[in-house]
Image (tube, rainbow, N blue to C red; front, side):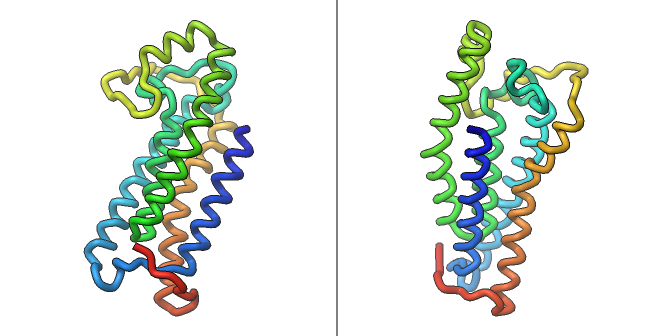
Length: 198
């Protein structure tokens, strides 16, 4: 299930990048301040998402199925990895200097991920029963509640697994960089601009 979700997410991202490769932001020439603001907001979200995903990775690297993780970012909400993924995906969308692309990303996320979260919660409930039931009552499902933060003094991490997770956490930064390269290729007339999008 997790591999399928990863492949679907990457396919969706590749198709969006391909679409962006042949389109142009309507804000870029006429409303330069808007396109610059969208880009900077996107970079801020990408930065928060990358740090957030790295933080999540420290806690789940190698422990995701063995133990119920309830500390660090998992004390703020039950699905912090998906929360930060949404921020990063919308951030990358904003780096396209459009409103349409992040909106498409948000709608796709809102349509698909509730099913993923429900499926994972069913599995965790089966594995951890009353402990997970108590966790569900105490911690919000998706949006973090900062007052709930609990972090241990020490935490054992599995470096080999963490390294793989770290690479995954940086995808958003790489995608934002790719969009900047695409914009430069448009400016050099190397890539065609078949559509104008807002």
